[in-house]
Image 1 (cartoon, rainbow, N blue to C red):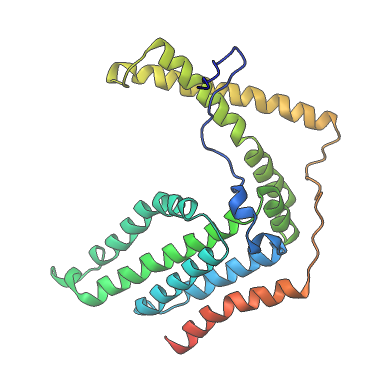
Image 2 (cartoon, one colour):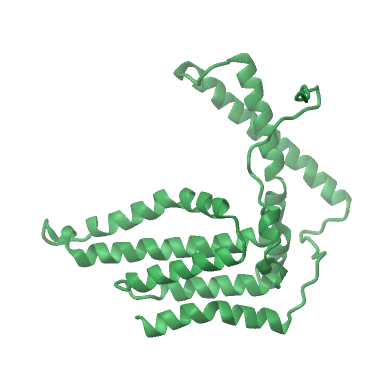
Length: 262
C-alpha cells in the first residue's frame, strides 16, 4: 500500500481556496472559445434585460432563470461552482426580498398583501438571475483575459491594473493565511475557544502586516522591470462573426420572454 508523503520543511499544505481562475472543466466548454469582450457585453445586456422586467412578472423571471440554468448545463459549467456562488449571495438576496414587504408603510396588515410578496419574489429572482449570469462569465473565462477585456471596453487603466494585481496575489494571501492557521493549531490545538480569540486576532493582524510588506516588495520589483501603471494585453482579441451570432442567440430567448410574457 502506498503511504502518504510526510510534510517536509518546504511543504506548505493546502492553501485557502481564494483562486480566481475557473476550473479546467469550465474552460473546456464552448463559451470559453468566444471573445471575452463579447461575453462581458452579453452578460451586462442580459442583466439589464432581467432587471427591466416588471415587478409583478415573477413567472417570466422564473422562466428566465430556468433558461440560464439550461445554458450553464449546455456549456458544461460545474454546477457545484455555481451553487457555491449562489449560496454566498443568498443571505443578502433573501434579506433584501423579505425586507421589502416589511418596509412598506400603511396599515399594520399591509405587509401581508400578496402583491407585495409577489414583488419580493421578483426581487429575489432578478438577483439570482444576475448572480447566475455573472457566475457564467467568471467560470468560463480566465481572470487575466477577463480583466484585459474589461480594460479594452473602457475601464480606467489604473483601476484595471489594481484589480489584476489584487487578483494575482490573492492566492499568495491564502497561502500565508494557511501557514498562520497551521502555526496557531500547532501551538493551541483543539477547537477555537473564547480564550483563543485574541490569538486569532493577532494572527490576522500579522497576516495584514506581512501582506503590506510583500506588496511593497512587489511594487519595487515591478517598477524595476519598467512597470508604468498599466498591464499589457499579452493575448490579443479578435472579434469574429460567430461571436456576435452566439451573443445574439443567447440573448434572443430573454428578449422573447421580456416581450411576449410581460
